[in-house]
Amino acid sequence: MLNMPLEDHAGDIIRKSRMGRGVSAIEVASAANLNPHQLQQFEEDGHEIPELNFEAVAERLTLDPAKLRQIASGWEPHTHDMHQWTHFRHIETDDGGMAVNCFLIWDDASKVGALFDTGWILPPIQSLIETHSIQLQHIFITHSHYDHIEALGKVRQFAPEALLHSNIKSAPKAQQLVPDERFQLGSLTVSYRETPGHADDGVTYVVEGFPAEQPNLVIVGDAIFAGSIGGAPKHFELARTKVLDEVLSLPGNSLICPGHGPLTTVSEERKHNPFFPSAMFT
Image (cartoon, rainbow, N blue to C red):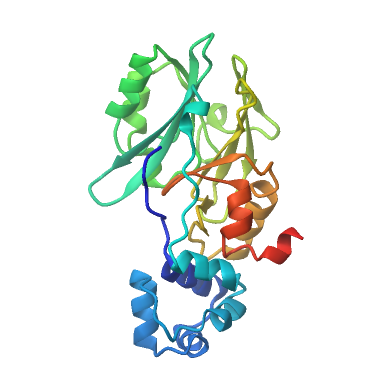
């Protein structure tokens, strides 16, 4: 398992919620018992300020105060034993300033595989495919933001037979996902759920059928991160509702594979993500 920091600290979470709900910095600073400069600094670095009133800020922004405090105090998701998914790889690439995740799965018997997003560069993807003799049959795109598809052209040159799938409305019709569509990779089944908000074309993929009762994979792009969600200043409530309905409704042991930051589970996010108050799950 890659040792990765959270994508968002507590300051990021307050900023995302504040912007998504259209609440001014002055109003949040007042609720937080801070001056505007202190709030700005906290939103930038997340370093806890003793006088910050988490309860008042959380109430104003409809966040869970206990979960927000957990994030500020250094909560991280459990480290997951990736060896239980013997035919799944988490690939992180970095352009020198922004790390992004992509994911590779394959069926052991047929060696048919699928790639979810491409990240920045081809070499780590190519190395895994060649090492495990995988026939890359599908490329699934979670959303069209550039950091998730930067290497797409090179991946398609390397594996021209692979079929491309996305929810991008301007894509050729043959590449567009169809409602209730399911894809079979040997014993593995890939289905999708629309999760717009962070991106208009946002999609979450669910992978089922791993052997030995290994939990499902939920590949979410930037819809949700460990302890946070993707920024959605224009469609905040849509983003939050879609994650609640389409991701956090899945079995608790499902492994959430986000576009940035560490992997987590549905149960961990129900318990620790400040954007989803505990009352939602009672």
